Image 1 (cartoon, rainbow, N blue to C red):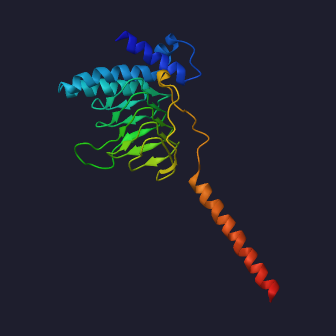
Image 2 (image 1 turned 90 degrees about the vertical axis):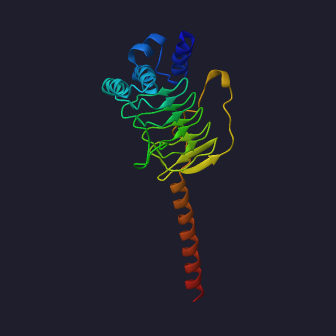
Image 3 (image 1 turned 120 degrees about the vertical axis):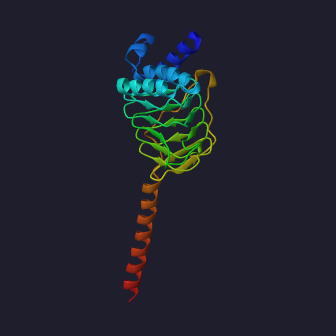
Length: 219
């Protein structure tokens, strides 16, 4: 148990360059506090002590600003950077080595019963403000860009940006060193499908203008 905990701390240090020590992570990172409290709440939730589980989760929300329903299933080395405003729904399932940022929502789309929240694969990065809504899977090694709204399944090794979210990269890039529990945390150099479409329209307008000028000269 302690080995897993120290491994978790080291994974956070690896992903966050602002971190200098395990002690700093334990004392100053709300992610660690919220995950520890969630493990306790989930223990009671599985044993049908629902009210106790919800009280613990609400206490965690009050202390950390991170809301995780006690029914959510969370894998190893789950890192929430900053964390304020994060919401994770009841039937959410999160794999290993997942990284998410502030104001991310892993939620549902209505009042459906049963499985209604997303399943997040291993080594997924979900950037700040992204919303993943619905009972589908985000595949392993995928990345969701900042502010994106994802409403349908994402295959493995993809990058999704936009509202609604669109797949802009699918190149089967793998994590180079699986032993490091690493992740590609670049949230800046992502393709912009809207800018690409606008550039195509601009080029088309230029060509049409050239044709019109040529016709005027002919007349």
